[in-house]
Image (cartoon, rainbow, N blue to C red; front, side, top):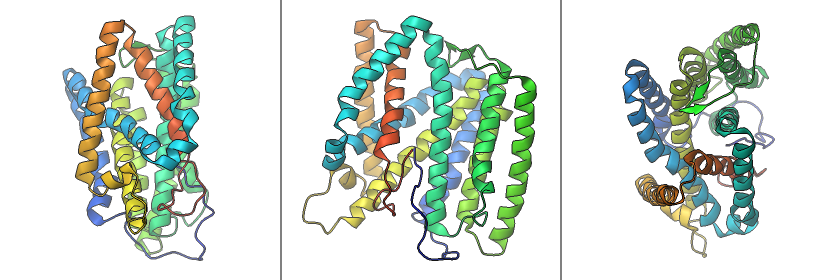
Length: 348
């Protein structure tokens, strides 16, 4: 997940609008990815029997690739690998022990419940970090630098998770689930506040975009964030169907961003005498990066599935251990205070 911790631009006033990468990438990232996620949600809501198929495609093409992208970042760069030894040696053991203990002491519902709330936070933080990077790469903040923009970014996700909790579902992705008990009035009040704040922010952003003092790209990303979380957590009744929408969105934007990060690093270091790290070389071509990631993820998770069949270990323990380890690793390898995306300024 990505959060910009830099202190901001050295120059005052709005900067000239510039693309995040190029027009085609920007359009796909800000508009295309959310549309694919929302269309997938529409399919499973209209045809519930299609859910297993859409989920399988999401997991194979995006979910597995998402995790593998993290490990390409972690192990493919010698510097990152040296600085993060604990993340790929000791941490997996600790996570597995913790997940097994949680399942043994409380049952699999504890894993599903922990995953639901952790992924909600993970997805929200990633989206906020990406929005901040788009702001910095294009122009002044769409809201003129007020705190409202940041409040709105968290308001709808918070209202959404409170609403899901108040609904009291007992099943999440086919697993027993026990949400935090939230009174309905609390969920309803948070939704009203979130919608009101969002409406104010939309008017403010629209005025700045129309006046030419804010980038339309940053405003569009804000809109996609609001729509995806509103649909996923508030408008779709089924908790699992709603999760699928935000999961597809999150996975796809993560893979695309990781490619962009390495692509920029490759361009910034192309004249260096030392050979480029493997991830930077792969990222010179988006097609190559995606293809290699897909092949690796298929091989790795194919081996995991085969091992599960032999060992007869509950799949939820293995896959949630992978998820939880990924969340911790992700929060560490993107942590930096360096000021440009060429030198990563992303963190949890």
